[in-house]
Length: 456
Ligand SMILES: Cc1cc2nc3c(=O)[nH]c(=O)nc-3n(C[C@H](O)[C@H](O)[C@H](O)COP(=O)(O)OP(=O)(O)OC[C@H]3O[C@@H](n4cnc5c(N)ncnc54)[C@H](O)[C@@H]3O)c2cc1C
Ligand SMILES: *[C@@H]1O[C@H](CO)[C@@H](O)[C@H](O)[C@H]1NC(C)=O
Ligand SMILES: *[C@@H]1O[C@H](CO)[C@@H](O)[C@H](O)[C@H]1NC(C)=O
Ligand SMILES: *[C@@H]1O[C@H](CO)[C@@H](O)[C@H](O)[C@H]1NC(C)=O
Picture 1 (cartoon, helix red, strand yellow):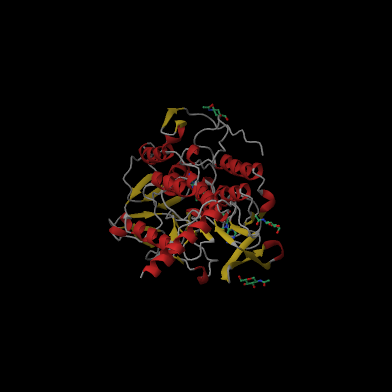
Picture 2 (cartoon, rainbow, N blue to C red; picture 1 turned 90 degrees about the vertical axis):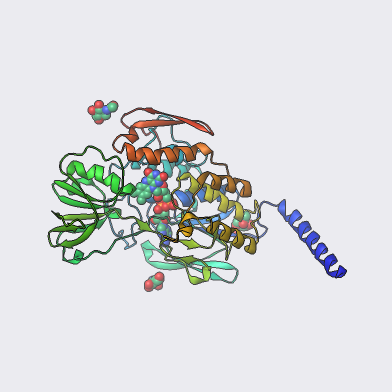
């Protein structure tokens, strides 16, 4: 018995000694290569830290330019090579959250930019970030990742290079998945939809309100996209029939706006609602949200994915089964800046800046976290990737990994904006915000035309 105790203590000391020695190193001892999937906000944020920490990496991006959702493309469906277009950006889009909650760490917009910049201004900002941080040389455009497989102690990533339509295999020691969370449009099924003779689309393929001039449009949903599209469509459509059950301060729309309850079914020339009423329409727009999707992920990754969740992840980032894989952005109800913090966390693990808990410990933390989630308690959905207390999440990332602390004021602005948007849908963007310190901000009415002084 004594001997066993002694052995145990010796082992503990040895472990401590070894850890103590390796702790001081901030770079992996063997040359390693990190593959990042996607050059949207998340992939670029991660790349910036990888570069800063001296890690070799390549970003694989399917599109012809960086920016992800912020890249406007007038086309819908697929690009000239048949690769699905990831962007849902449309004309006249302005951010629905103050830019202060969306800025990359230490990379503010020019001060004179309104707090709710246009999509094109945000797109400039993201491209400028990639350029200023010297990331462009490490980004491989037109490279659509089709498979990521665990092979031995590394990952084999296969991508299709659009210009020569050839498949290439890359050996990656680490993989950061940053392919966006708005990838697979959710299209609900309705009785009779196949008999409807008009145009049917998802908001993912909405580009320009002028396409709906004089149309009789049915818009389904009042999430961020549904509400935003309602404000654009009501201006141009002959009539806008809006089916939703959001309780909010509906603007004083003109008479061409008709609010309706849930849909019962479709007929050739229109739609019937659950209250029995009928509206003639020629266009249906489903603003019904998106599912996650990592179609390239092989079973060997050890992750379980559905359109609604990815598990098991430590801190909603690290693949617990193989902690050399990281997923960014599969969390809900958060600010964009959080994606930057997740990127820094992933890069910090890769650079050996801190040591992850053991697999057992991570699983324990994962399960403890799981059973605190309201979504699990009331078992409505299995949304395991929900971040309920965002500020605590930021505190945890900083404490565990030294990630730059996103100050509480960002969470406060997010919370205020989420409510204010529903109270004042047509004017909430006419306010400017200024962050005063980590805990306070001011906000004032300042309607104006946009200035976007970003030189590319
Ligand atoms: C219409 C719309 C408006 C939004 N407005 C706001 C807003 O106002 N405020 C806010 O905070 N958030 C907003 N968001 C959320 C927005 O998604 C985030 O701000 C942020 O852009 C997410 O960045 P990302 O890099 O995670 O994903 P994305 O921007 O989607 O980038 C993912 C990138 O990965 C690439 N990719 C995907 N699959 C592959 C593959 N297999 N191989 C290679 N590359 C691949 C894509 O081409 C894309 O470039 C909005 C989202 C949408 C859809
Ligand atoms: C980066 O790659 C180069 C060339 O392959 C290698 O010499 C170097 O050690 C690598 N650095 C790291 C930190 O992995
Ligand atoms: C590339 O891989 C895809 C499968 O992802 C396959 O369908 C296609 O035929 C391959 N192309 C070539 C040129 O080998
Ligand atoms: C915005 O610009 C338009 C012309 O482009 C001008 O008519 C309008 O007065 C400007 N509005 C403000 C608030 O500056």
